[in-house]
Image (cartoon, rainbow, N blue to C red):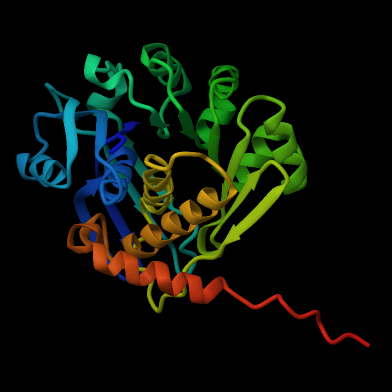
Length: 310
């Protein structure tokens, strides 16, 4: 079975939503991604935590098959993010405080055993660090990258250099427009393709995600849920399902990309049901399969007959 490599953050989150508040719960892009993708393929994690990070969290990741050889533990406190979701708008987190702590001086170092991993996610970190990681990887089959507006405005030149080496790029609609300067989704996608990545995934929050590959456009809806309690980490969890599925397929093609999009949407639909990683911790493979089948019913229709137009 093929491995996945993720480079990102492991953090403590303090999150408030209309459903309550949780303090110092497990968070971070590499953490959400690893918990999600570990249901599909073994994961290798490169991140950093402080001396305050509980061993039990690391043991939980290891139990999910996450290889922690690349996880650095250093003197100081773990990255801590505080955010709130106001009212019924669960698409946008409002950051109240960011304490980088040990993450401020994080320099990713890949163990030798990680360097030939074929499927790689450069999670949402400084593009300059993403470039340093790319220098350490040998002949990857699929390199995916995530980013945010902070890097688009503050480290644009470095981000553009990263994209020259990226196959699959994940970003939301606003990030796409800010990066490309284009008004429409399609023109922004064309602009990106001219600069590197040929597979573009646009995350759309409660409206799902869209895939652009060659001449194909595929839209994966968000699964209908009665309650969305905490959207934190939904995008990273989506990426975990997406790349976890793709890690072990023989060929990256339209069929597998469509299925991978649904796999990502399935995983994202679970993580938002509870705070932090609580739902991923209790999740079972059977629940994932059942929701995957439910997604099939949600999006399938019979197009064998033409519309009865007059």
